[in-house]
Image 1 (cartoon, rainbow, N blue to C red):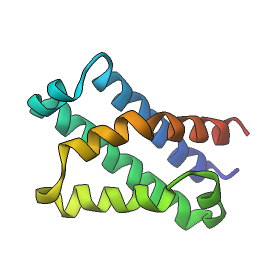
Image 2 (image 1 turned 120 degrees about the vertical axis):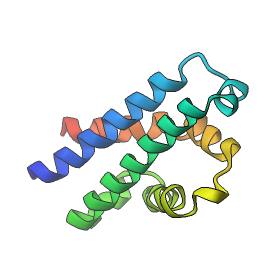
Image 3 (image 1 turned 45 degrees about the horizontal axis):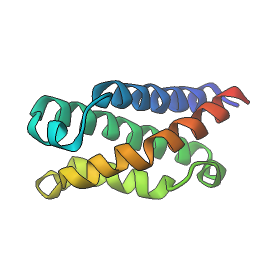
Amino acid sequence: MEIEIKKCLFDIQQACQLIAEFTMGQGFEAYQMNAMMRSAVERQFITIGEALNQLLKRNPELEAEITKSRKIVDFRNVLTHGYTSISNQVVWDIVQTDLAKLQQEVSELLAE
């Protein structure tokens, strides 16, 4: 695997870990009330989406290896360009339901 692909995967892995740390032990109410936590989580999702976008440009075959890869890139675009329409509930649901799977898939790719 080329080094630039590994860098992108590492960036995704790190951002996933940071989101998990930021939200550990927190519930939706705490997330919704804490502007700093929301900003930090959204920033890491932007990093994930951008790194994944770059990764898929370098190796389009990896799209099949990462669940919802196109949706992740699209979510990054919403966070970056459609920031007025961001739903805290949607972001929180992604943290709760999709983050661990993404982290697992990226870790497996890095281990290859």
